Image (tube, rainbow, N blue to C red):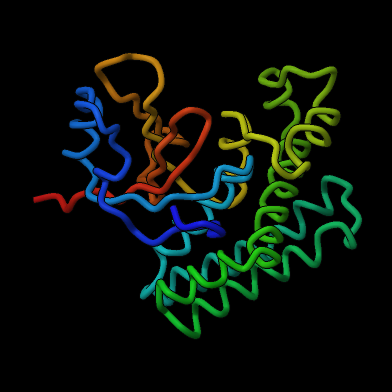
Length: 227
């Protein structure tokens, strides 16, 4: 990945392979996915990857982009319901709306890449997603508190979710996917030596985003066309 970049250009899937003979799971990965877009490993990679990949999947679909913009605008109600002061989220929400509007005006991958490689813009998008995840966890506390390993859900949200550079957990992924109505397919290289593990969140939905999870890091995957 190029120095200084937060999100890379698309690269052949083989760029992920070790120099020695790749394990079976790498070959399996190559059969299913043609390319990868790498995301900087700074603790924010899941959030950055999810938003970039979702917006990229909406390019050239004006109606879908508009629907997503409306969803983002409506999340101000989630923040209010969770007791957030408007000053804590309004700027970051406006940043995301601005990014979406620029995608509407210029339906080009290069523009999206430029926005996500601008540190201030990109980090503001990540902060919005973190705050939204926290708000969703808090407003659905009856469901989520069982999954959180912390003294209480509020402590978990403040320390593990809202803080930048903290790696996300499965519960955070589920909360954010629900809050923005995004289905994500996570392909994990962890665990079994021979087989990839596949997780679709939420289960049963059609994913718009495909992410590779490897050594606590997320990159964006692009499936091979189905024949």
